[in-house]
Image 1 (cartoon, rainbow, N blue to C red):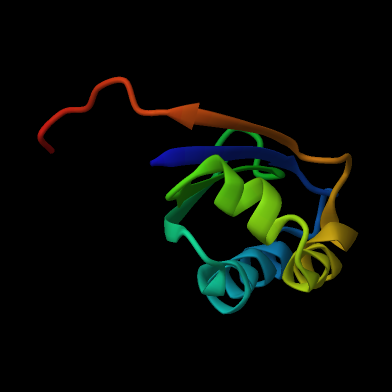
Image 2 (image 1 turned 180 degrees about the horizontal axis):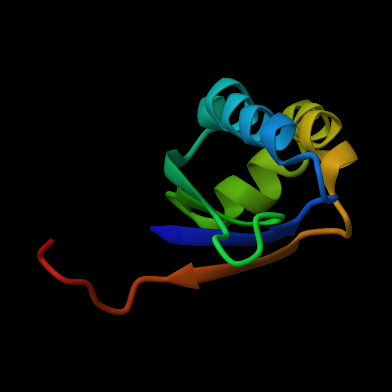
Length: 101
């Protein structure tokens, strides 16, 4: 399992619109991709224009070669891209350890 972590900064004053757009985009677009396992999105308390999107993929290729090269990626960016203050910073991680809860 691979964890994609996207650190997203949006334009001030557009939080409510983006809240709806990111959730719609993940559930209607990304969740249909091959290798998609699940997601979470967190909104900053101190900085409400900052979001951390976590997506679990079966493999790095499912994200980078499958989803990122598909027409669905363009649909995703079309939906959420207009809100970005700057391009998201995206990194991938593999699980090293976890708690039981």
